[in-house]
Length: 238
Image (cartoon, rainbow, N blue to C red):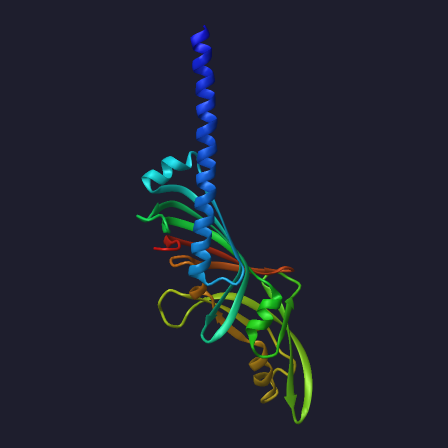
């Protein structure tokens, strides 16, 4: 009985020690991977990594992770010569195969979400237009000033934001903002002047981890929400 008690105590102590070491190791790995991702993405904001599954050490030894959750804040990148910012991007990477030096890997599949605020959409328009919620899902309000016969007029339109295939045929996507209708519709020149300020396209694919693609979007009071997915998705260092 005494021997059994000793064995149980030793087992508990070893279990606690293993769990402590395992949690320290996963915390260290999460911080290092976050640093690599932040450096690779050139983030002005922050990166947080959460490695799921227990124990971590056995996963690390086999170079196979069940799931890695990534949250990026302040993702800034330039596409088509224009600066665009995502307020937040969250993604889950499944069945991650780590590379030899543990600096990154590839996920068999991934999915996630992103958010572009109206303030960031306003900055991305680069036409002086101001964007806000349009009062219904998928709608945005665009306010712009135009010059007509020497006078500056301010017009607001309700626009639809959609996800479209990029014209280059490479499978990329663009976010498209188009006014449903404009004041002075049918008057020669006026509609064109207004749409020049209110309508625009933006490519976002170049700012995402390789293999992660936009699949859907919608708009609400907070901004434009992106849905993301992909296969064979690259993490930092790969």
